Image (tube, rainbow, N blue to C red; front, side, top):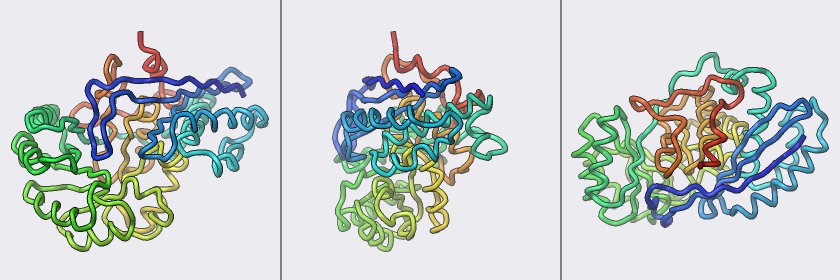
Length: 347
């Protein structure tokens, strides 16, 4: 197989602000895998050093090693067998890119969408949340009103930024009582801070709070102290034993953090066996990452709206998967779908 790798920098419309800092330019790695018959599969690595613990350079180095593995693979070998050992040593965003590309390649060989290869009998539109990126009250209020007008039934707001109470009150006022509000703290709080803050924020009505603290025992403590608010693991979901022993209500799974579609499906099986509710999200992925998550969602059937409506946050690039009425259609073409490669090479 021939493997090509391209580094892409995609600029956001405005800085994306979270408790972990600000992000303006999103590095992405596009992977192109071609087999001996000329079929091509595309994948994407979306590393964030503060989230995945590896940077773009680490991913590029791993993908170079994978090139050797793929070039030596028999033409008819299934990709999970070819990559089994490489998975154990490579950073998960690099694994995700190759896994994604191989699923795309397999779908194109078969002339079938990936969701069908995953065993889904149908691919209903995926309900998604609206991401409120503004860190100020006025901007958050405006975006909440936009979300409500566009038919979203859930909005997600970052917390741990300062003025959380004022900003969320503005969001609730603009969104109305029917729209649920999800919080994402990115582990900004200690256990004591999380308990106090969530008690204070509870009156606005909270669907879930993602990653209020880091660590399984810390999350268990917060969940016990604030039972009226559902918690979800996010970054902590990648830790040892996180999916085998339920410590809170839900877990947010991501293609890049799970090592691709294969890893996400495995994580879902383990999480649900432990009693977690499951939903999917992106770490500001490009369209290939979003497409992979949409196909996976057809098989997973998420329990909550998914955080996949993020392509509109990028500047100068058309969104191939625009949400309509708070839902995104799952691609129906062969593989992951068509029309995404140009997004990575804007004019």
